[in-house]
Length: 256
Image (cartoon, rainbow, N blue to C red; front, side):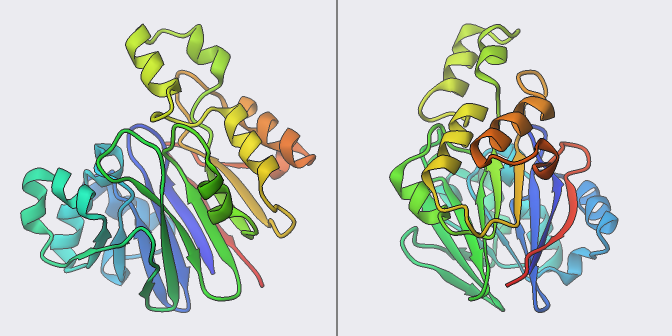
């Protein structure tokens, strides 16, 4: 199994997971031309995708899903709540597949397991991808970590983990008080320190990759995120990857 990011942040998110010829795109917060160009950077044509899975309806995650799915006839896996909140875009999702947050879905060679998270969306989920031998856990939008999230991600060989903001930078930054409260609240986004606490709470003995994702461009830096996660894992900061808004990150291979 391998995975790559097309970009991660408040201006758009998409992550590609590939296993034995199956290619699943997690979220699409980019327009059709932009996602096509970003896929080309990692050597993939949009028509080679098998499905899109969606975490929630916010534009930076779901804004480009309907157009991409309609253009290439792709099935879209999402919760009932997310589908209900897509508004006019629902009409373009002829191949929508409703998922149960308690049940995995089989997409080609991949098992895709959704798990619910606390975030200010209608029915948000995050996902774990597995081929039966290795596991990739993704957590990009949650206000806090919970025992359920820890159970879902524990034992993974690879993690893409939200490090949205540094708490001090957010508190002393330019955002209005209401937005600061939303971001830092229990239904907002995960701070660097909270992401590090999550790593301390799970089995990380099999980890081959950890990538900090969804970094705020105003309230965080790659250095802050790396330092927090490296401290939790007792590893060098250079071992921690970072998904950028413009470049995402290139292919990373997970081995059994």
